[in-house]
Amino acid sequence: MSENLDELADRWWAAQRLAMGTRDQRKSWSLGEPSAVFAGYLAARERLDQGGAEALELVMALLSSSPDGSGAATVGAGPLEDLVTQHGEELSPRIDELARRSPLFHQALGSVAAARPGEGAMTSSPGPAGPPGPPRRRAR
Image (cartoon, rainbow, N blue to C red):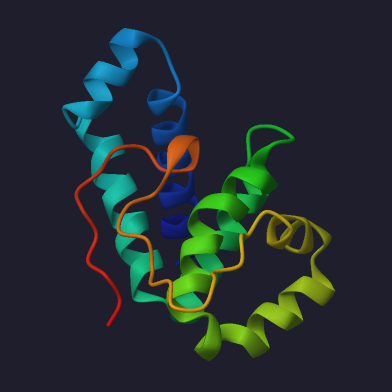
């Protein structure tokens, strides 16, 4: 399972590099290329959208494989924020535990924007934290 998580995390970070790369890289990414990276990104998004312990494990894998010092902010403002928005109530005990035990997770939580009352889950990932992908369904 950890090998699969490591692979998903590597492809998610590769997607971030492509989405923020040169014009040619961004254009290729918008067309779903390279296909292995795009498929890995979609699999990571699906796991995050489903929530649960598996999604938190992926967040931890993303944090531990961050290519630079901005990883906690990128993960916090992207996948972790989406996870908290969509599944925060069910995951709050585990999130609290991870925040106490992992300084990196605690740092990432600092980049999670709190939703205002009445706001639903975002339907797509914003900015650099979320490269273009298919539209995501709203949580019900």
